[in-house]
Length: 376
Image (cartoon, rainbow, N blue to C red; front, side, top):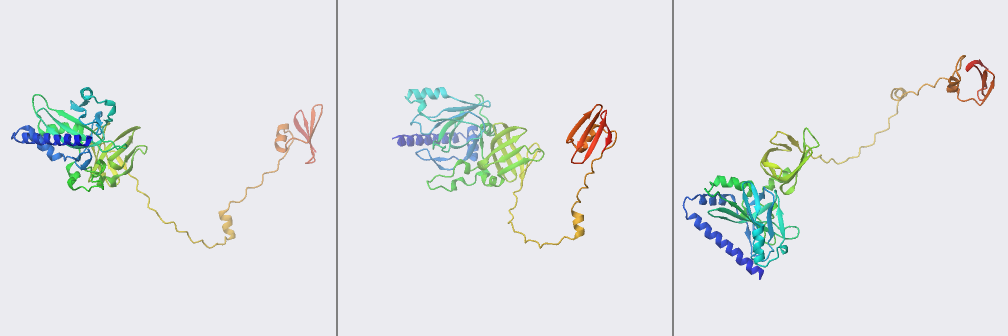
């Protein structure tokens, strides 16, 4: 029953879009027509089936702002999704009105999976509509690890006094949604399908990652080896510079590496030549070349070579000379004698005289007033 209702809802949305497009085009040179045409040039809509699954790949867009509120496509039919409005550089969601509508339909909001998207996440656009007051986009995600897809509405209102030019509107759109360049999207209509009849995921469609794959790896800052830039798979990068970490997305077109993320102002374009990246600040990052594997070939044992006698004296240090034998002389103190010969085996004292007996040396040393006076 839910599938039938969802089919009707999607068909109704397509009908509304068709009617709106016709009415816009019938207005001749109206600026709304120019915006519609510009969107048609830049955006390829992804196709949905009756169950909300992506069947045809379209343009891939990357969120540039945080806090886009989305709900699961498994929500009851008629529940709709939050309306996210982008105005004056800020993204806000009308959660109150959406929850109020759920209450009127007697739908428990806690029964609907929710997701708050952040800058850097990628989406499909499955529908857009140009009206006299705004342009609205229906945004769809790939299935997450729990096999749940999310969707939402993004509304960009016009100024009440004047409809913007196509260029002005596209600049505003780029502030919140970055559309992959048309030349990197290729022929999306002819994109290979998988066994389930669905195209590749967002990470493999229209993102120009075929050329980015060759750029993947770890780059080290030339003048500061503690700073690293990792270009990972699926167009995701991690940068550590001056002790701070930056994360985001990247794309590669020829020798241009474009990077963007929540902590990076705008879309930064870098030069990528071989294994060297030069960023806008002229900082150089290098990817170390992978060492070539060399097969280990055991060397043939060398024949033993007799060492001539003369060579022994040249290569081997001579032994140190023997230490001089300890000596004793008249007038030395007891400390000097014991330092040279050690403690005596026996001592004897007689008034001002003291005698040290070294029986192992067969020596007797007499001290008078603490100094050697006789050696026997």
